[in-house]
Image (cartoon, rainbow, N blue to C red):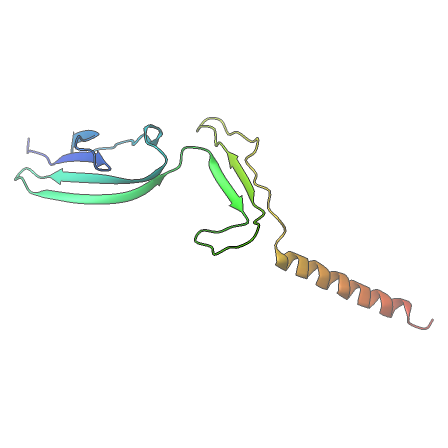
Length: 135
């Protein structure tokens, strides 16, 4: 049997690999063991002649409760008092979905108000024209 390439998997800057296999391999990365935030998956491959190949894949883990905020955006320039609406909810696990708190309330966008006011104005215009016609 011919020698196979080896695959070594690292997370972030850890000196010890989280796994080492012979190619090809199917691997499940359990992100529940990682803290929320940005991480780097580094895959090192060594062929039988000793040559190395490296692939780095940045990813973000978000296992904790999702946080939604309305009233401020990232890198915003603000002043005065800011009314903020903040919601945080857990996703449960892959077998059970937690519905409580999973919907984030949001204010009605300005374009919806403009659309409603335009429709009401249009309807009033036609009602006035209809009732002002001579019989």
